[in-house]
Every structure is written in structure tokens, then in C-alpha cells.
Length: 258
Image 1 (cartoon, helix red, strand yellow):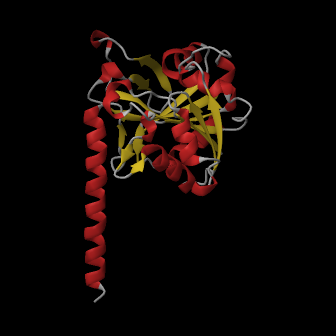
Image 2 (cartoon, one colour):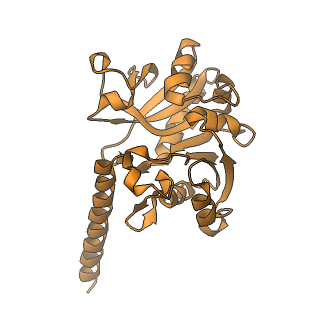
Image 3 (cartoon, rainbow, N blue to C red):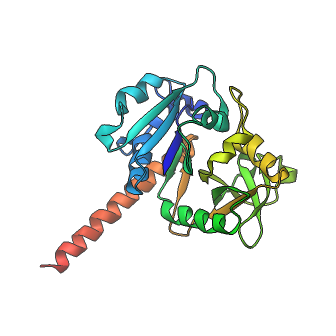
């Protein structure tokens, strides 16, 4: 299994924080979010990772190098002009030659990735000919800013609408920015063109009769898009809370052993 982390973002909504670094390099309690994503992927045995670069690429290159210091091998793809989420993957088509995970680089999460991978494999075995991807989904308070998903009871995606106007909102269930893809999804993406998974690829796949699956995140999982000041603060606070809980649990365990 390989992975693509979309790391080219400028972070225009948090511009004061990203004047000299890409948005995925924003620190979350002392570590760049991008490092946390790399560590998270590696914890599930994914050690071949690609990253697309555009804004301040040297910051990422200088920090990660070839990835060996972090226990992974990193392939870089530089984009002089942004290619969009799907265009970035298309440029890496030779690398993404087997089922792969796509992770948006501004996602802070503890998603149990193995559960998503197992669900994708199970559903693919049912509809191998048409299955192209499985999307992690979460509920959002701001549906007009996300890609909204309607599913049937089996988890098949029946409708996908990217950032609809308020009068066209039909659910709070949205694309979480983490997905498992089959290589053939890239056949639906033109070369050297700005192209987006949500805006272009997913609606085209559904129109063509291909199968997308969706799996909502579990109650004990979280996912935060750090692209706004408010959500970035939430991620920081969540890490502090988890750190305190971890310390408290360790203290209780140590006391119980006395």
C-alpha cells in the first residue's frame, strides 16, 4: 500500500501563519502536522509516501529529505502551477500503481485507517469491476464549505456535491479528505490539467456508473481541517487534552502498581 499526502496548499485562510511555510507544516503541539500524518501512515505499515509540492517546497524538502529519518521513503512531485487534488495524483500515476491512500495535508485525525482499508477491500470484493474508491466521511456544521455525500444503506455513494449553495444542502455528511483509491480512478483524470476529486472526478465517476463507497468515522475518532484559525486552535486544544489524559492515565497506572 502506498499513500499520497496533498501538501501543496498555501493556507490562504490562515495567511498570518503561513507566510513562510506550507499549510501542512503548521505545528500542532510542537510537531508539523505533516510529520504527524507521516507517522500515522507508517503506524499502519504504509512506508511509501508521495507528496505534491508547490508553496515553499524547500521547507518540506529540508525537513523530511528522503524520509528515511521518519522510517518511510518519500517521492516528491513539484507543481509549478497547482494541479488540484486529482491533478496532483495524476502526475504521480506511475508511482500510484496499486491501491493507494489519499490524505489531504490539512487533516488532523486519529482515524483508524485499517478499518477504512478493510471496508474498502470487502466492498471491492462485492463489486470488483466498478469499485474505484472509498471515502472517509464526517459530519460538519458548515455543509456549504465541504463535499457532501449521500449514501444508500450499504454505503454506496449515490450523490456527491462539492460545496453546494445553502438552498441545495441535503446532508451534514461530508468528504473527510481521506480515501482509499484504486489506480483506475486516475483514468478519469486528464493530464497536466487542474482537476479536483470533489468538483470533477467523483461526479464523473457516478455518472459513468462506477462505484464509490463511504464510511463515516467512528464516535471515538476525530478529524479536523486546520485550514481556519478556529479549527487550528481546536486541533491544538485537542492535543493538549489528549496529553493531559495520557499523563493522568499513566499516573493512575503507576499508583495502582505501588
